[in-house]
Each structure stands twice: as C-alpha cells, then as structure tokens.
Amino acid sequence: MKSLFGLLGLLLVLAIVALLAKKQLGAVNGIQLPVAPGTAPAVSVQVDPQANVQQQSQQIQQQFKAAAEAAAQQPRPLPDEK
Image (cartoon, rainbow, N blue to C red; front, side, top):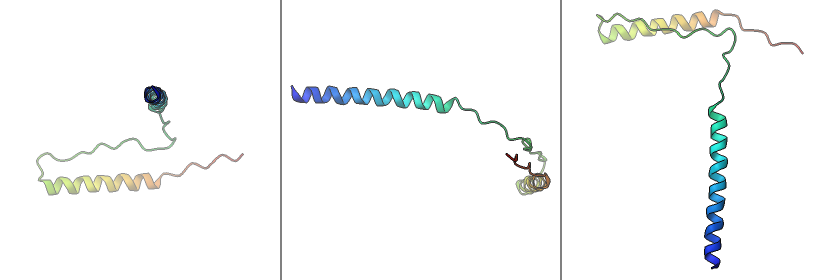
C-alpha cells in the first residue's frame, strides 16, 4: 500500500512537471524577435550555372566579401541618451 501511494505521488509530480514544461515551451516558441533597425536585408547569391564548382565558390566568396564590406560601411545607430 505504501509503495502504491509512492508510485501515484511520483506519477502526479511527473504529470505536473510535464504540464509546466509544455506551458513554458509554448511560451518560448511564440516569441518573435524584432528586426534590428538598420540591418541589411538578406543577400541572395547569384552564381553562373555554366561555371565549374571552383568558379562558383569564388563567386560566392566575392559576393559575401562585398556584402560584409557594405555592412561594415553602414554607420551604427547611437544609443538613446536617457
């Protein structure tokens, strides 16, 4: 009898923890991060389909480098003075 109460108590605690975990994960999944102002839009990669793999890789690297340099040239927003 004592072990039966122990097992039922354990199952009850497990059910409570599962419900709390489900509730917490549901709250976390619903969060959407705002887009930071001044961020650059996503860059689409344009490669020549007739080029070989090495040339395509070099094209992607050059496009990435150009996008990184363009992003580095943008001024950072100043924090609000409060």
